[in-house]
Length: 239
Image 1 (cartoon, rainbow, N blue to C red):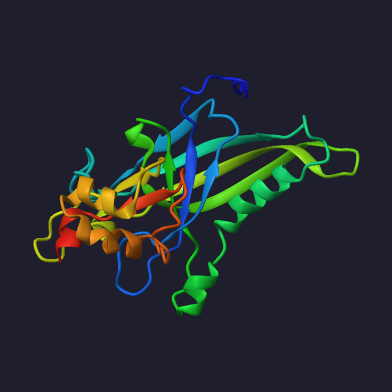
Image 2: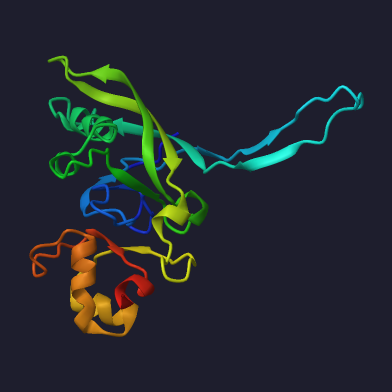
């Protein structure tokens, strides 16, 4: 059952950070387009991964051929999102939130204008649940509207979301050494600035422009609390 909206401030909400796809040769998610906050945390989610093996039968081996490992697939995640505005029967918030999820399967205007059409890249986050946090694309969205207001507008819906991980070696690999580099996502709190984040993350406040470029920020002074920023790997900033 979804938890009550009256839960304490200590409750960590799940969210989906929706980013522009990278432009050019970049392998990092583009600027943050929107953060989709869950009304209710998922009651369950499913994470899966597959290892591919193949067996080639041979006539001289009647007991069965030795299987050959062909590689591993990336992770997949299925999560159910419950939306409810029944306490505001004339609100269209459920309609808008479902549309936000559906738009994750469509090409962004920025990528289309850059002649590199692509849907957004997303990052699911839920507190310290690191296994569920990976950069992905939205493979499918299925929305079921289950309650309607007197005007016919949906005020309750359940959305089934399927995410496919984007390979990490294509996302954060140091082209000089071939080693994987680590990226983090930071949620802005009161008092944060790009300079202070650069100092805390890299020990150099002057490299704040790397954070700005990674997130498509034109005005570093307009940094709103709650904004989620991709912090590039230190190796990327060093180059």
